[in-house]
Amino acid sequence: MKLLITGGAGFIGSNFIRYLLKKYKNYKIFNLDKLTYCGNLDNLIDVEKNPRYKFFKGDIADKKIVEKLVKNVDVIINFAAESHVDRSILEPDSFIKTDIFGTFTLLEAAKKFKIKKFIQISTDEVYGSRKIGYFKETDPLNPSSPYSASKAGADLLTLAYFKTYNLPVLITRSTNNYGPYQYPEKIIPLFITNLLEGKKVPLYGRGLNKRDWLYVLDNCRAIDLILHKGKIGEIYNIASGYELTNLELTKIILKELNKDESWIEFVKDRPGHDFRYALDCSKIKKLGWRPIYQFKKAIKETIDWYKKNQWWWKKLKSGKFLEYYKRQYEKKE
Ligand code: NAD
Ligand code: TDX
Image 1 (tube, helix red, strand yellow):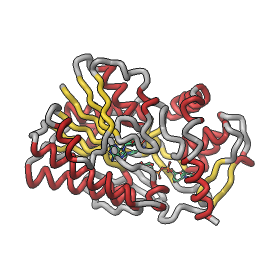
Image 2 (cartoon, rainbow, N blue to C red):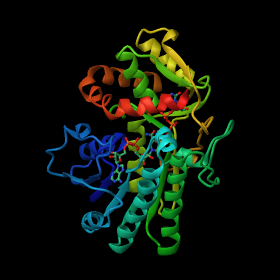
Image 3 (cartoon, rainbow, N blue to C red):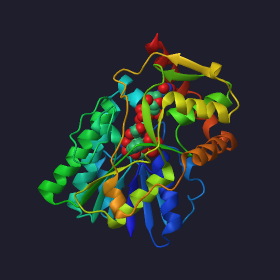
């Protein structure tokens, strides 16, 4: 099988490429990535010389490079996105361009070259927030931020290409991932690396918002199953079922790094902050998937990874990153 993975230099995409190359010895992978601030070829240093893997620098919204690659593959898995909610609040433009127009460009090429499968990697955030209960795949979309609205737009376009053109599409919607190679702007790597640098951790509001935490390799296993056994035209929710308030999560990280609660800085809340995401995963469970990574063990291993791989994140937490955080805090005054 020949696959085009987009956004493969990001967090989940790079973990997925490594997972696929190891598991399937006859699969060939093209990785198309624009290398935005969070796209990082260091994430794939160990596979870059693999003869079954090839990297292409480019934009999923650029029809020319997209068509050149799509005509030579069987499957497209679209991980490429602007993915950080806070950035989407400050600068939504690139979210619309990549998450909506980029997905449209890929769908058009997939239609033109009669691709066998198109998998859109979406998110739990498209359903919006709920205090109790769990979203099913059939629930209406109710996104809150420019990020989740742009992902919802991409989902609707993807489904329209199935209904109108019979394009063989599938969609995955997962909860919050954590693990190695996650850009240190998302809560878990930001908090671990801040503490390792001797800085406080900025908790929004009172830290009572809840998230379901999915280890990235459990997500890779789920996407693999959907690639091989998923039903065309269907959406699949993916979650661990392990929910924590942000304050509970922060206390776990603090404890692992031998720090007390004085390292927490309660800061102004994120505008439009979703209280809780939670998914009903009975559909993917019927296909045969279950999460196998225990949070308590996987978070320890994740913290260890950031401790041991300071070369990886230290260079990311300088330059543009610092400028961005300065603006975040100006906004919070
Ligand atoms: P990430 O931000 O770490 O990586 C995104 C990658 O896409 C980067 O390598 C970036 O360079 C690339 N990219 C951005 N714009 C591009 C463009 N126009 N053309 C080509 N490449 C481009 O994101 P992630 O956390 O790995 O998320 C991957 C996907 O999974 C996204 O679609 C995201 O919406 C979805 N998702 C993420 C999570 C999570 O918790 N991280 C949860 C659910 C869904
Ligand atoms: O500094 C912080 N302080 C804080 O309290 C940051 C960065 C976050 N938070 C809170 C906000 C959220 O309630 O932690 C929670 C998690 O925040 P993020 O790591 O920014 O993730 P979230 O907003 O939940 O979105 C993530 O999950 C779904 C990913 O970024 C998305 O790409 C994915 O679709």
